[in-house]
Image 1 (cartoon, helix red, strand yellow):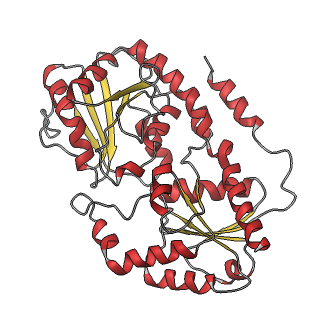
Image 2 (cartoon, rainbow, N blue to C red):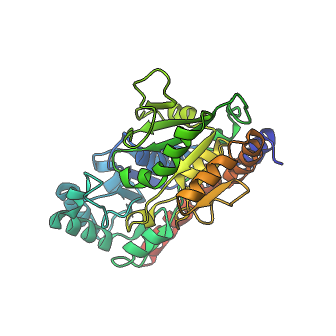
Length: 367
């Protein structure tokens, strides 16, 4: 079994001996600067490119440097009329940076019923703005193969750049609850107000276990979905706790590390088909095994019986959760999970971003 020091040593070997011969000049143009998408798709990439010796600037305003000096402009989730108009003007310039359209969700298949933002992306002008921006981009970058399939309708140069975690997450001390046997099993779930349908997948099994077994506790992060659950959190003997979202990623990781088991229900919708396994990767990096819906986003990531379970119905949810009440099993699975997560750090995968950007620059020069 790979231990934490060995994982740390493996990560250290990935660090470069010298800066690149020809650093890239990259401008990252984020859609927002206070979200998980910002952290994973912009900030982590920026920090790692800078560490490797590339020149990177980040702003929500498109100033002179990106227009005149940058090799690459990465526009994240461009959809509003003003930014898209600037993008289209840039695309017409004979001498300009490479334009990379970056997006992490299938914005063309958002369910307005469950996602309040869906109404925005259903507007004809917003959809057309996105399509126009995607069409003129030199490169489109996404996080999953299904999302690449969606966007390839408008651009044939789509590259998958996977969601990753920072290597430092692997070298943090193992969570105190790993393998702990104190008569409690803390099942954790995280999700926003857009995840009601996802939570509904796991709720019947969670409710039954809470009602019938005093060992079982539920910890919710983000939006609380208390309907249908016993022991509401406003009574002293409740085994349900809730904590709102935090914008501090380190604090978020600390909260997830206090789970014994991560629950990852995902409804089989068109939007969810393009989701990544980031929730699983986060949990694995912290040594927390997972019970997840048996859907494309998690197949190939969760290896049943090794680092978690894939489940299809309420009976399988109950069975998997009961299996993981065993602290020794959780400890063994958590060790395997943490070893697996070592392959999905930004430090180990940043070369994919660099190669994609360099190829796009070379292609534009050749044209």
